[in-house]
Length: 360
Image (spheres, rainbow, N blue to C red):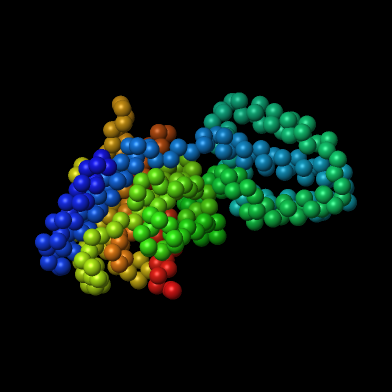
């Protein structure tokens, strides 16, 4: 698939030399969106996107962390009864935070996974933790420092993997990841100096609980993935160069033409079904949102996916912020229903997009 994409891109470039500028620019969006889709299919075929650490293992580690903290607080209370008020305040600070609120979601997910074995598993973990930590000798200074640490943990000062697993199970964030962003639990990614960004410098924020990794394909800068059991959301950041004539800079009016609904509809790749398209503005620059469905066959499985793609042109490059939805095996929700649920999140993420070139 990559060979086809590369050859096609070369042919498009040679052919563009014979076109006038207005015709030339009109051709680029549809060609490059198709090419981006070919790159995406190549990515999926070769990597199957991102295989995360098993969900149950993530949750077990997070649960063990919280259980260890509770055991340690009980140890402090036994050793230093005069610190009872401080222990209660630290525990309350943790429990009332988003991190603490997530523990219930972790327990519910593990319980669903283990079924009737959950009580036995829970009691065994508690006994092992008490055996490991309950008899340790601690000083008053160590106890006081630990209570301060618990308060810091309530603000997110815990190992990244533990924090991500906890927040991914938060009951409200799982249903609506936009809340995770709006309540300040976000990670910001910037492309400055990244070799695949092709000189484009932009920033964007996604929920803290989403995992991230470097893209393996030439134009894929970063791949984010949600851990929520509600739906496996994939977010891909891409930048592709446009073979524009030297020194040519498209006007805002020209750019706006490319993102009209009719033109966006023509950008849907072969085999895809157009859902909707609309013009919009990203950080003051004309842009568009294209939504289409695609079906992929893997062995004896047929996977229905919905692509919600935000695209804009900056200088001689196209910037893509892509969200891919596919229903998990244990849900009856269609991709259309999942879009209704998660589109506000996608819009919230895209709304954090900043072209840093504008502010230099």
